[in-house]
Amino acid sequence: MKFTSQDHQMMQRAISLAKQGIYTTAPNPNVGCVLVKNGQIIGEGAHLKAGEPHAEVHALRQAGKDAENATAYVTLEPCSHYGRTPPCAEGLIKAGVAKVICAMVDPNPQVAGRGLAMLNEAGIETASGLLEADARALNPSFLQRMETGKPFVQLKMAASLDGKTALENGVSQWITSKEARQDVQRYRAQAGAILSTSKTVVEDNASLNVRWEELPISIQKSYQKDTVRQPLRIILDRQHQLTPDLKLFMTEGEVVTASSQYTHSITSQDNHLHCNVTEDGQLNLSEIIDKVAKAHNVNHIWVEAGATLAASMIKADLVDELIIYLAPKLMGADGRSLLNLVGLKAMSEAIELDITDVRMVGKDIRITAKIVR
Image (cartoon, rainbow, N blue to C red; front, side, top):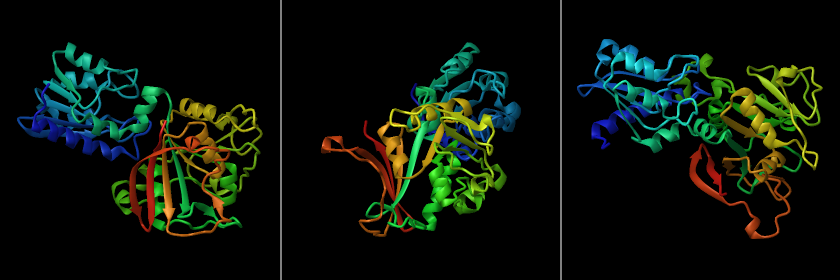
């Protein structure tokens, strides 16, 4: 199907609407919908929270009876199954829309073309593929898990310009600027889970939650404090270092511990991930990632940890994207390194990166990079 300039304009509006749910919809995808009749928008909406009405429902409610013979522009194929809400394809059929244009087919096995088939069977004209790349960019974590079964994993690191994360005596606060730390809060708010170690938690007395008051002002204006979702906090505690007096357990958000055996009284057994150890005595990170995704329905994991876990995650090929903050500081050769990658003997063994974005955040440089596989 050849799409018109109006089709492009309306789908771009639907994509813009979908972005309203970036901090609230997980594990559901971000979706926007626009209903158009006689060249005019008669209804629009976005999916804002799992379990609440989908984008199509909001748009249909706004349009009312005018939805009959309208064209619906949706960023993701309308769902065809009953979940916590009825199927959107059925709602569009009942409303009597004439045409549905979606940016992409939903890779969720429960949908995967069935929504469009349902609409076609009802005599509704359908098309897909309009601004698909833009629509895919809305939901990298959801799409990856639906297509591969694996969650999207981002590894955050921060260092001085000479690659140090702390002075030789361990002092590290603060390497990066206030703006960079606010930027980290934004990433945390998008994730379904934050993964770290008990060593990091104990050393920094870290809470690892989303602090609304530290989010960028633009986000605070768009989201009330009680609407921003707190990610699950997964703490690797191989040596059982966690204690109940830590800020981790005094702040909002669920905490799950991971170790080879359950010994904690500070978390319930339901909030413990039992995992095997590797030949070198380390926790099996691949197993943990898999269990987090399946047991807690997590699409997106944000990793904050030290040089050892960061290196282990990369060597195990578990990282999809690196977010690296570099501060305009020099901390000396005896400082602690960014990454404990050891044993490389040739340049062919070096980890190659594909840098996809470089920008200033406050006084710091933020580098976004994917590992070349």
